[in-house]
Amino acid sequence: MRYPSLLMVCGALTFMLAGCTTNEQVEPKEPTTQSPTIDEPETEPNEPNVDQEDVGDGESPTEEEPTEDAPIVEQPTEPAEEEPAKAVQPIEVNGMANLDLDELILVNKQIALPSDYQPSDLVEAKIDFVDSTVGERRMLRKEAARAIEALMKGAKADGIDLKGTSAFRSYDYQVNLFNAYVERDGKEQAMKYSAPPGHSEHQTGLAIDVSSASVNYQLTQNLGEMVEGKWLADHAHEYGFIIRYQKAFENETEYMYEPWHLRYIGTEHAKRVHELNQPYDRYIAEFMT
Image (cartoon, rainbow, N blue to C red; front, side, top):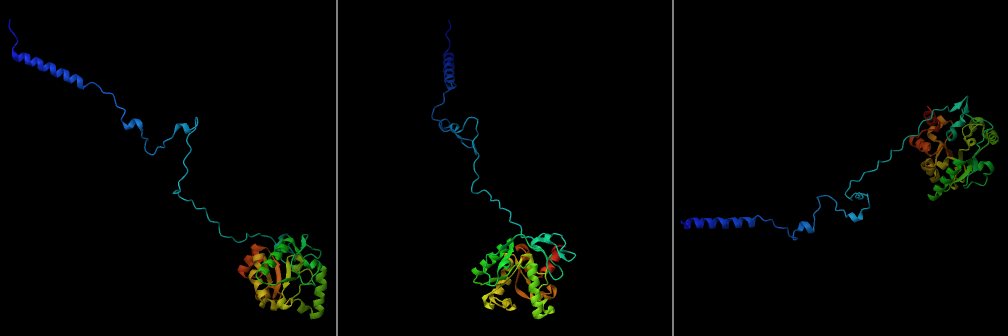
């Protein structure tokens, strides 16, 4: 019987030992509990970490408010003040004033008011009047009355002393007044400073004469040289009034300079007339065409 050689025995033993080592290395190992991916899961970049217990059933998380770095949207600026819109209407019809123009009504030596015209909204202006001014001559149309009250208050705040001397004048009052002036100075001279009956702005209820202690409350052109007259020239338009008969326009208005005669036309138009520096007759004629 032949015995295997020593070489064959050694080869067989080597083969068996190699097979046992390979089986132990490929056996899988269970993961340990030391991994940070299990204890502290990381969220996706830029994705909010939402706690599900804080969100109601079926509700989605509220949107985040914009940060302080968000761009500020500037509000559009208000448009510049525009000129008064023109309103095409006749100024007069056959020499009679167009009453539909309301506070813009034009009355002059060519355009008259009906003899029976009297505004329906006359009220007494709550300002200081000279003692001789009584009754209806303390009255103005309501809007003009409120405006003259504001003007007098503004004047007083600036240290300016003014009083009213004459406001509304009825047709009958104009007849008596004009006749008295004609008797005293003659018709030609009276026509320079007094309107014939029906042609007086005072009948509109939108005009008032004012004066000051500096001229003894007289209606005199000297008022224009006084601080009170200069204040009126500079500020009357802010309250809706114009100095109706200015020295530079005597040929157009056909009346002498009257720094005491205020005519209400509303702040919008008064400011425009003041800016343009033109007589009201010309302004309203251009405005209505």
